[in-house]
Image 1 (spheres, rainbow, N blue to C red):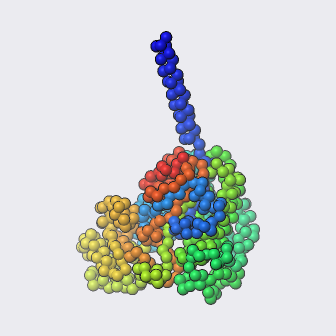
Image 2: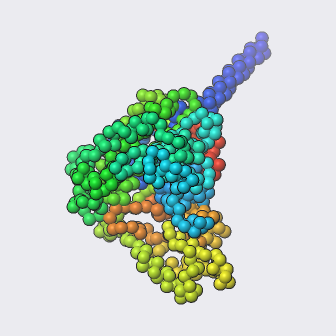
Image 3: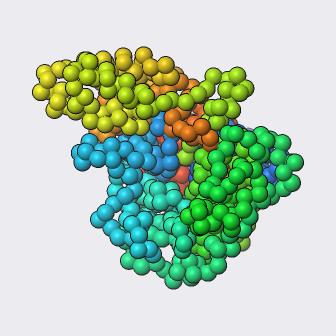
Length: 554
């Protein structure tokens, strides 16, 4: 009897274990199969991480704060390469890799094959759609790898849609990938229309035509005033100061900015880019796309990529510490709330996933830093170039050994070097040594160094330079300025360096498949795409070098 009791007891526990295992396996299968109906990728152009914390007390509950309180906050998120600029930034977010692999080494760069400067998205083999200008002749053909948006299209047999939107063409073209259903960008000027390329379509959809012919853009032709009383903007510097730029026709840099008065002198609707209203126009158009493209309407995952570009234009004009930057972020917070509310209503709060990051950070205006006794300043590139050409004449009796100097890189003429029977390694090292003599240059790397060595993350600047250096496209010598030094006008902020003020950006994730929480562990921009691939169950983009952020996934 006792043995029978023991046998039944064992049988009971075995049965419970089997049931638990079956349920666990069933839950795992459901987890694998459960995809969001829509993924919304948001890139805020030139957003430093500390804009999240600096303006926190002013944000409402439905924008940035909602993402932090309902989602996951990666506090130590960085670009792991330089140059930190818009084209490489957008490409790296969506490809899961760096310029060393995806090939987007700048917004413009010297092309060794054609011996001319090329623009990241330009493509004369396609025509403009929605405009008679050249502004629509674009495609992603210079991006060498696939994107997470491409992988979703492949995974769903092209039933999942990709719609990409930004004021800047490169902010739409690169996130959309090679297979986007549509990418739209804003052409300023008199019309102020959203346009595209024949790479995507032969004519604008009716809803885009309707948007362009509406009063949606023209309604923002009004003075730019602060959202809150200006006395409350204590997180920023004084409104009127010498560190900010001015529009044509403006006497002062302070609020309000009288856009109707400045309209004709500053490109008409193009002026809106350099105000907080540019982000609102982008949101208006994104909401129209959400409605008219039926995004998130079925169980097949769609992608909507939105880049808010006006934050970059405003930062360049007024600088990191300006009231204009603060007001732009407070208004962007309202636009995010509008977007999230529309997603809740149309797609369903549990049915979409959203991430928000940036394409680079920005530096404080160096003259402002100098006033605070912080080492900072400006590189005089014209003087430096003249000195360098004199060096070439003295050292090699010709300047022909160099074909181009751009983007803090020197491109050598290999044929001339061969004809002069010089060793390439020696020439690289001699030129590198020359640049190290220049006061505001901190480090120099040769192509041979970057080719032959493998720099670990702990090496700092060498690691970032190598990740941004493409063997076929980049220069033979790369030079890096001192921290706090830029080659830029005396007003406004810029970016592009491997310094931490340009690399540290936010990463917020929220929605379907995302845990609530935060991490101070280092994460990197190329980690975003593989994290989404794991979430969606798709293949990784084909150049992926990042790794999934496991803490984020539910």
